[in-house]
Image 1 (cartoon, rainbow, N blue to C red):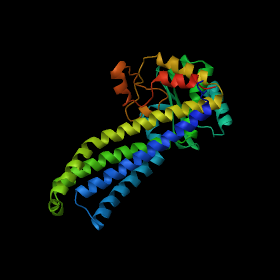
Image 2: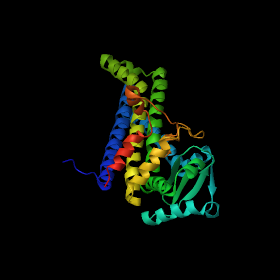
Image 3: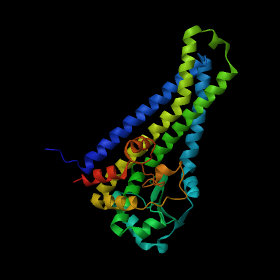
Image 4: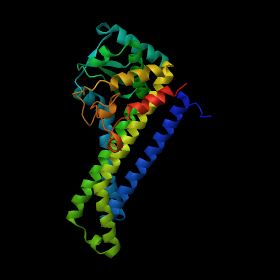
Length: 308
């Protein structure tokens, strides 16, 4: 007899898989940095100087992302903040869920677009915002909207936005490392040429990594994003105690094929559902899913329906 998968063990499984993915991601970054440094012929103090520059750049990017990413994202998305008087029902829905989740009330924003979508942002629960499109407010009933809001509040509670900001920076740093490697390789280093065949093999390996590592890093980033969507679904179902309303919202949104015009590749992972409304079939779909920010909606719905 098949075991019944509850919301609680889905949350636990998703958390473990996310941690495992992050460990792998960190290991990939460390290995790539080491190979690039060795291939360039850096040893001792020179190697430490090279890695130090990398760490300084990483620190600056992390600092900027931590404090200003939410403002940048809200501006890019053309989201307008509203007050309780503008939509009391929406405010009360979010407020009630926040009380149940033990969260402070986030700022509420609206995107004036008829596409059905939503997202949340902010570095922590005390500095967060939840955003709805005009279309999702008009096309979903209150129970379905509550399911969507619970999903987005779960992102806030689980610190998903901070996690994805760090992952995005790691992806950018890997691309930056590859670019720096190529530039410094062309400048040349005499001691690199003195190491013979072993050094030549290492350089070839580094060149291949410099080409492929940004693609690999992006695939890991997308895998983390998809896993966090499953986790937010499970956490949202725990919050409302009604996974069916979230599943119904996903199905209704999947039937709306209108893309969200303000979305772009940099912000797509934030949204409740894929804002580009891609549809692929068969083997093409399997390959395309590797590059999707969200799991297929039918998989999310199946996981929610399986919760008891």
